[in-house]
Image (cartoon, rainbow, N blue to C red; front, top):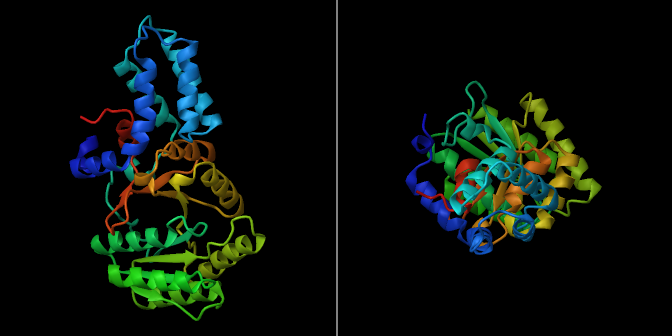
Length: 321
């Protein structure tokens, strides 16, 4: 199956538009740094390092990229801009953890056969777009023909429950909720019990987004997982960590804290359309070896895209034919 068989031109154009600010910050600086040069020397590599670090790729990942590029250009007498772009695409793609969905040639929202209900627990701090991402996911799975249910297990903020309820109405899916301050694990238990009784295909559980360094919150996530397993053995199938791509190094720290506290299986990086710091996607995926599964490129209900690392990297470096 070819690349564009499952990554449509429309999606690619949306990706290009959404990453425009990051592309201007990375590719624009790269092009200016290269102008007038006939070789990639140490001075240029120093500039390249600064470009990546200021785009929040992260120091560790940046060093990997620079070392790989340096090794490759030493074998060539001359490397032009097009060749450099190709090198960067290849090396950065190699660093990014593979999204199993796109690795299998599947660009659609789908669940594995024989796994019903398919349970997704969503974690992340307040303000990163967690509830919005859940709403978009619910809409995407519903549009794909699945029966979807949401669980409002962020019981510490009335606004969180209200927001999830509103997204449930927009996506036309059922939301299971309890009173403010209820036990979050009890909400998860009720949601999965109802899902099993009503033959639901996909269950998405929202969780509290209090400060990520609070031990109580992490203990709560463990309890929610333990309770869900009593209803659906092996649940959750995914622990999706939502990160705000515009927050740079804060996103790295959140990834570190959550991956240490619970078994994060996938990442959703939001708000990439409004930032020049989209390089955070590269650094976080490389450093934590967790695949990016979704990226958010807008506020609309359809503005959630399944992550394809090749499309992402090519969009950044101008290979948009």
